[in-house]
Amino acid sequence: MDKLQVVKIGGNVIENREALLDFLKDFATLSGPKILIHGGGKEATQMAEKLGIEVQLIEGRRITDTQNLELITMLYAGKLNKTIVAHLQALGCNSLGLSGADGNSILAEKRPPNPIDFGFVGDLTKINNNLFEILLQNGISPVCCALSHDGKGQLLNTNADTIAATVAGAMSRNFEVHLNYCFEKNGVLLDLNDASSLIKTINENQYLNLKEEGILHTGMIPKLENCFNALRAGVKQVKIGNPKMITETGTFTQIIN
Image 1 (cartoon, rainbow, N blue to C red):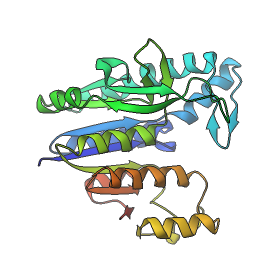
Image 2 (image 1 turned 90 degrees about the vertical axis):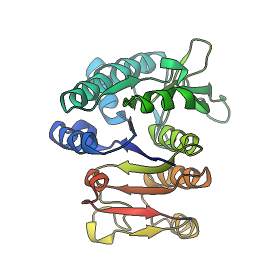
Image 3 (image 1 turned 90 degrees about the horizontal axis):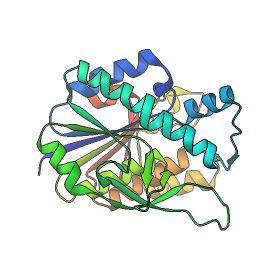
């Protein structure tokens, strides 16, 4: 099977123009088929503050009411997504920006209101493999933002890490998929403020032990859960680290079975 790189970019890299452009240069040089998935939650929070829109978080997760959904749609599927696509085109990487509604690419259902009503948040149900394969076969790199849809006209805010893991797992039926979670840190750290505390490899038992001991940063827990879900779905390799890891010059944590 052909190798497919699925790369999720997030964290402070999205907000830092210089870091984002540097990453996009590296992404554009990757040979073979590739898919880029991006977040943008921090920028959405900053924009909401500027516009006077209240942002409510529960356990670090955004409550997506109507106003926040409108803002997220404008930012994720508009400014952020199209800026990334424009830069990739300038770098010679033919790409196409997608929300989950475009080409029916990513379907979800609205999360039930119990025990917590997160509003217009989607739990993924289906990936349109055929669409992604057609684009990749024609040399086009999909660039997906963190929006899905329910097939009934409703857009849904959806975690970008989860989209990356789910797309990677779905595409593993026909590709040897390598999933890369890129952000500003060097990987999974025992101490968030100590770069030398990098864990070079981690399996699920080690993860569960570290989680139980309260050692892992809370923001890393859902990301690692997505990593193990991807491996269970057939993804060949999963890494978390700084953006340079996609060129094999960066630092990362490898997630193993």
